[in-house]
Length: 326
Picture 1 (cartoon, one colour):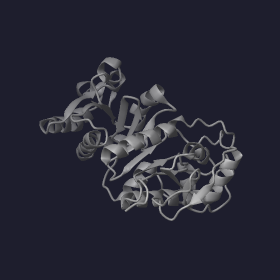
Picture 2 (cartoon, rainbow, N blue to C red):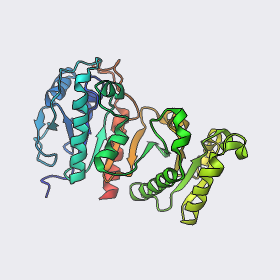
Picture 3 (cartoon, helix red, strand yellow):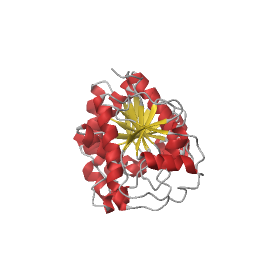
Picture 4 (cartoon, rainbow, N blue to C red):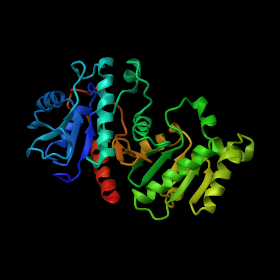
């Protein structure tokens, strides 16, 4: 049995970015938050920020933490980290922090994980195939599919496809993929968000949702048959809807979530509505995972001027979701 209540794990992401700074700021004084990082990196970051934040290294996230200190599961940097300067040598360090956090979540020694931004480009430059947290954590958990959803207040936008070139999107939206995505979205809106009968808006792929087949047939041949089938199973679904009018207030008022077909179809609207306060949630995992809505902000790293709002919201939402799952 754990010596303390289950804790959330924080991964600082790219060590040259703003993640270490945000983690130090937000973890100070919170005994239920444990970082998965290089302790020396956190100590130097806290010193630069003039924070009184002793780093207490742990072997398990559920060990007692000295009062006033930040618990840390240690992962050693491969090379010194300098704010704003990417180094491919540290790509494997970033991956190891994510892997260790996921392993503890899967083992039940942590309640969930909250991730600061990584830099996908430098990880790939290091020869590590990596398309994003979402896909990496799905592989760690051994699940066939997960769903990316961003949350900004009452607005929730989930995605059928995530980090794909636009030219590859239509072929990736199969009946099987769409049906599984809606099943995961529906199940986690119930289980994690406490919505007994979620109301979901489903966007079409093409302009004007295909204009009756004149602007594309994906709505007729793939999307509509899936929606019809799932409605018969009891899901509350509207669509396929034209993306340019789906986000008007009168339509959103009656919806719990919007499912967009691809990344830049739904997320620009959400980020306009709540950038800096939005939260990325991975649905379909056997544990809670939330993240920020922004990147590594290399130009702000080391300046002390990074906005911690999105990470604060990610921590707050993770606590709510963990509580509902308990």
